[in-house]
Image (cartoon, rainbow, N blue to C red; front, top):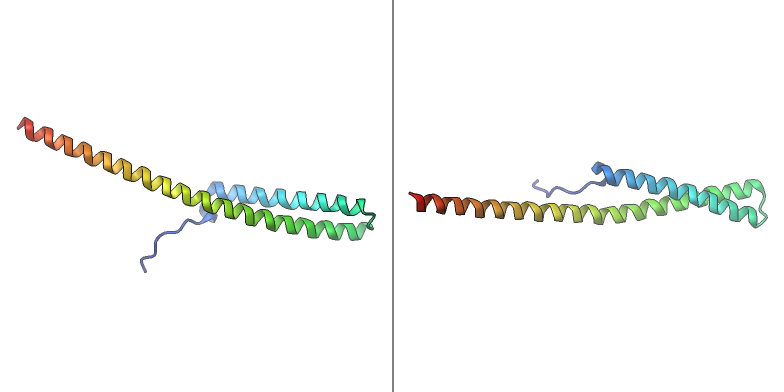
Length: 108
C-alpha cells in the first residue's frame, strides 16, 4: 500500500478559500443575471424567481467546476516547483559537502 501522496484541494488553504469564493460569486451572479433577464422578458414573479434560482445553481456548479480545474493545475505546479527547489538545494548541499571534504583532505 505504498501509494504516492496526492494533492488534496480540500486540505489546501488557498485553494479551499478561492473555490468557496468562486462558488459564492457564481451562484450570486447567476441568480441576479437570470432574475433580471427573466423579469425583463415579462415573466411573472414566481416564474422569474424559479428561473433565477436555477440560473444561480447552474452558475454555482459551473464556477465550482472551473475553480477546481484551475486549482488542480496550480496545486500540481506548486508540488513540482517545490520538488525542483528541494532537489536543487540537496544538490548544492552535496556540492558544498564535497568541496569541504576536498579542502579538509588538502589541509591534512
